[in-house]
Image (cartoon, rainbow, N blue to C red; front, side):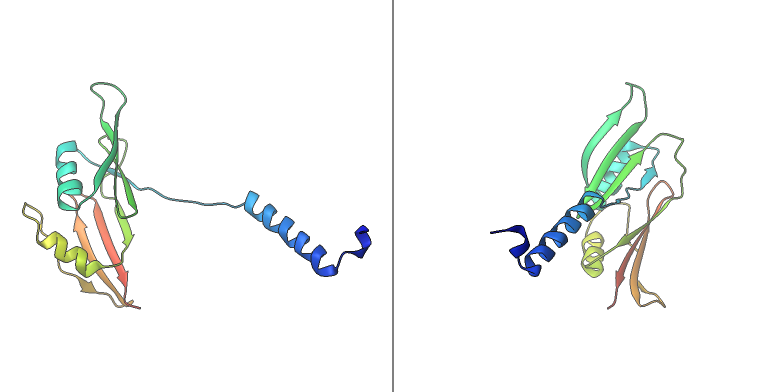
Length: 146
């Protein structure tokens, strides 16, 4: 079969395929991971681990007496925690949430020094629960009502 006898539909599908390949090769994906300042790794493990249910993915110390840099995660949310004083305190992490009522119930059942606040309704039609960590950072859990 000669090249000119191919149907226009066939040529078009080859053209689309090449464009899809080009878009795939030039695709940009971004993912943010907040870095929160902590001052005590054991308190951080208690708050984020025991209370909030995060697991420690890894811990790193640049030297034996250096501050910790660690990653903890839960249900797709990844946080980096650092004792390094170059990171500022008072960060806010906005957490898009599904199942905020279940999360509140889970946290309310846990013993210890931390108690989750109530869930509030916002004027922009969401449910919101804000938790201050022991280091001055704020976790703002937010669920759309729609």
